[in-house]
Amino acid sequence: MILDEIDRRLLSMLAENARLSLKELAATTELSSPSVAERLRKLEERGVIDAFTIDVNPQHIGYSLQAIVRVRPLPGQLHIVERLIQEMPQCVECDKVTGDDCFVVRLYLRSMEELDTLLDGIAERAQTNTSLVKATPVKRRLPGLSP
Amino acid sequence: MILDEIDRRLLSMLAENARLSLKELAATTELSSPSVAERLRKLEERGVIDAFTIDVNPQHIGYSLQAIVRVRPLPGQLHIVERLIQEMPQCVECDKVTGDDCFVVRLYLRSMEELDTLLDGIAERAQTNTSLVKATPVKRRLPGLSP
DNA sequence: AAGTTTGCCTAATTTTTTAAGGCAAAGGGA
DNA sequence: TCCCTTTGCCTTAAAAAATTAGGCAAACTT
Image (cartoon, rainbow over all chains, first blue to last red; front, side):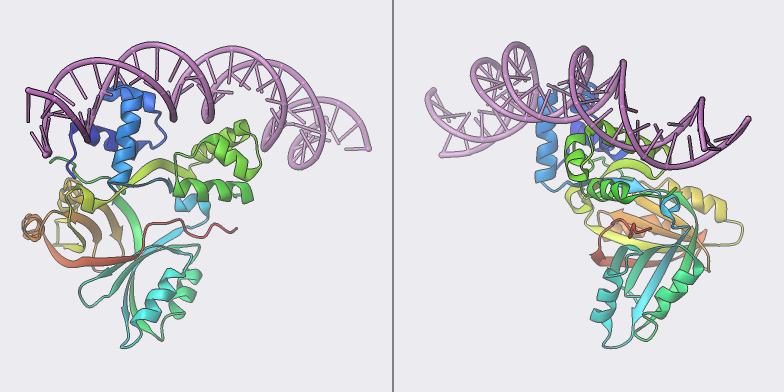
């Protein structure tokens, strides 16, 4: 459960480049590559590392807009709304939260029209409140890892 | 700018496991490994792939709570609030959005107390509206990649 | 205090990646 | 239309990296 200095170092490096070789990771942690391999295996096994993945730039794959939509299902519509959200290919992330707004959804969109169509699709089952993303002052990153 | 079927396949596979070997990627796309290497190089060069990275499970590194906070800076405080947010080690993501709420911030927190302390720190400069994450119906994923 | 586990090491083998060279189809210009 | 360039792929060989095996010492366990 607790991370030592070497684990933190590995996580930081991998967060920046998950394809770093064991050899490179080994060099900066002053471990041998088999030891690094073992550490990574355990970090995954322990669930610390959920996945090795990629960040894709939505703008470069045709999604020119990004929106954060708060969704408040109407009475009795919660489950079906949840399912509708999950099935939207434009939805890249959805959290169920406390408060009046039940879901917070991040959408990637090709156009305003697409946003409109998408929201129309759930308008009968939920109230929505949409914010368009104008900038991203903090891009997804690791939180502080200090113990 | 446009992705062909092979690019889409590579992106999907890497989104699930960014450490897949070129050989494995080559096998499922029926290309040779040098060709896959070249494709990846170009996807990065074009900016389609922003980064190879890891997903870390916040619960496993001591962050038991997750919050989505909407932040509305008071007049004249926008820039300083933006900087304060950027400097919070608990902030893993922040978007500047349209609408009354200027920023949408995702925080990882070790305790309620930590949340309280953090928000107190900007209370004089911004109004905040906090939602605690109860569940995540859609974990960060790729959007549809169809052309 | 003996036994076990953990975490690391080195060395050897296997696997993967990278580099080089070539070929054919597609695109562009004269 | 024809030639030339570019692009995207291939194979092969060389270089680099990952994995496996075996061993050792320190830290827990009983």
